[in-house]
Image 1 (spheres, rainbow, N blue to C red):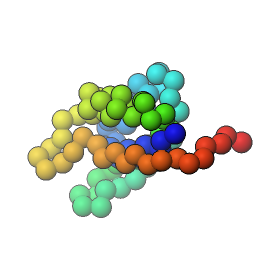
Image 2 (image 1 turned 180 degrees about the vertical axis):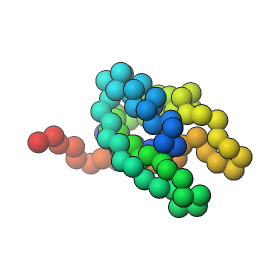
Image 3 (image 1 turned 120 degrees about the horizontal axis):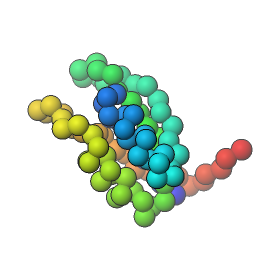
Image 4 (image 1 turned 120 degrees about the vertical axis):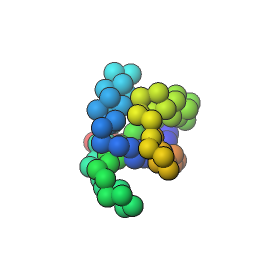
Length: 87
């Protein structure tokens, strides 16, 4: 199991969440603020199987708006989730 921590522009978050939820993924949205430009960002926490990670990153490339010069569509951290449990 992998945990994707995705930081993206606030304006892209709705469309990304709709596509992920529509594909059966569970997503947690956290409001965040960028450190450099102090713009509104959104951080998404997504649990996924290792085989789904590339698919999700490709989805982000498709949905997120083209970035301004020097910016990125999204920043994605993929970390191992040693244990996952819903209570």
